[in-house]
Image (cartoon, rainbow, N blue to C red; front, top):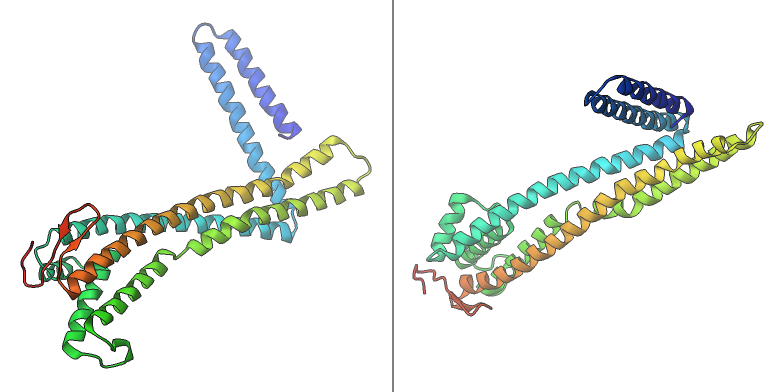
Length: 287
């Protein structure tokens, strides 16, 4: 707090305390609460005014660094919100599709289900592309180099391509979050060093040096370090959370691709880790 704001807060507290003494009973507690709220409001206004004063006395370098940190923060929270919502929607659609897939009696029913509900998640897109690859190769054969080989080879390449595309799609924005998390603290530290440097120059040019002249400018310069940490911490936490979520999704997608490949190319039974036997037949029978 500045000396003026401290005096204002003290006067407010003293005035309300005096009023509390004059008011009997429970009313004094209400007046005391009013005093505390008034002092808090003054302190909040003082913090905002200090931040504004720091920006006003900064040069173009300081203002630019502050703008960079604000931009990083806005970009980080935009990615957190957008990717969080997209991931929740994709998870919901994936669970619904997998439930319908394993409860289907044939691949034809799964294909009809895809035409009805669409392919809006990684698992349904993988199944849809695998079905199209099988039908295309069976109908047209190998018409170019990408289709050379047997039907199973062509389906395998198509599914691998889809998994690569889904991996790239899931990693969108992670580079930005990682970059913000690793660079924001250093941007804030550079702003602090720059602010302290100019503060010391101004102190050296003044006639007298006191603790008030040193503590104020240096404390305001340290605000940049706090801003850098405030930007970096959410970015790092979000990056780690999204990376873990992507790893789990891709592992599940790889396991589903193994079962799907067996169904599409051979229609044979596939034994899963739980000991159960899954089988989808193209002729509509279910075992």
